[in-house]
Amino acid sequence: MAIRKIITYPQDEETLRKVSKPVTEFDDRLAVLLADLKDTMHHAQGAGLSAIQVGVLKRVCVVDVGKRHLEFINPKIIKQSGVNRIKEEGCLSVPNVWEIVKRPNKITVEFYDRNGVFHTENYSGYEAKAICHECDHMDGILFIDRVEKK
Ligand code: NI
Image 1: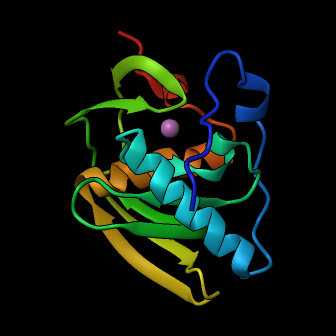
Image 2 (image 1 turned 135 degrees about the horizontal axis):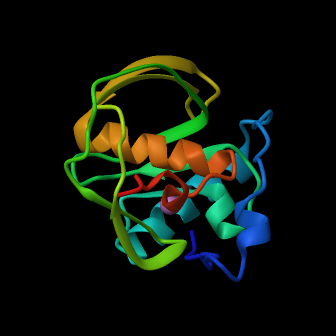
């Protein structure tokens, strides 16, 4: 386990804008990546971290909004409802920027776990918001792209 370097906007925008690739091998390298993402997220006191943020172009992220540790591999949001603007959003790759972003309040996510087992789960509130934010990273989208114009 190790703390990896988090890349940041705007210096590393070229990488942050890339679309990450699906994971096909659920092996030891994936387990190491997940452990490193967890350590790096906690070290930086973030609520979530995607692999692209440490320069790895894989559809992998971790989320921990203070409730429990979640891991997502190849996540896909298949259903969303409600509106959640309750909290200002930030990103470890966009330092010192906090903005209100409109997100769904409830989502249904399909994903794989580290063992390659498929899951469908529901999430709400801050967890739903964080998962949406991390899924965006996998498609090269940053939260500053979604800030509502005043
Ligand atoms: Ni982020």
